[in-house]
Image (spheres, rainbow, N blue to C red):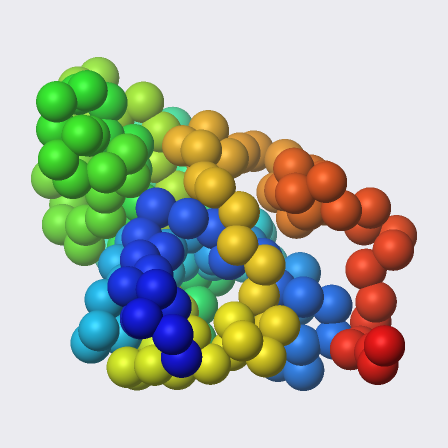
Length: 189
């Protein structure tokens, strides 16, 4: 690995699973990378809804102020294979100054953000996910070198895009790659 490869930081980027990567948990997956450094990486799949689960169905400890609003109908997504029993809320950081320091997307496991949203004071966008994707030191870099992932600049609106079925193909198109031309497996020149 060259010196510049070691310094790569994918926080705030999307990882797009290559066709034929061999891991069905990430098939056509779009992962928003929340953190990436020499200790490893953490991200959340943002385009894999559960089979119709909603916040109200999975959370038994929600305050009445949340359950009495449409928030109880928020869809739940599969965030990744690590700790799938744990729920996370991805949310837009709407304050420009805070977003500059923290990044445009935050994550929490606290209920405060849902209570704020129920009071009309929450973030503009939220996505509920179960679990996350994680990599140990150097693991993600190796997978990228093996062409398992494409890297795409993340935009906040894409993290929370309602049309999750089209997100994968649209992001590949942003790279100037014809989706139909992506090979199902690696080839030889």
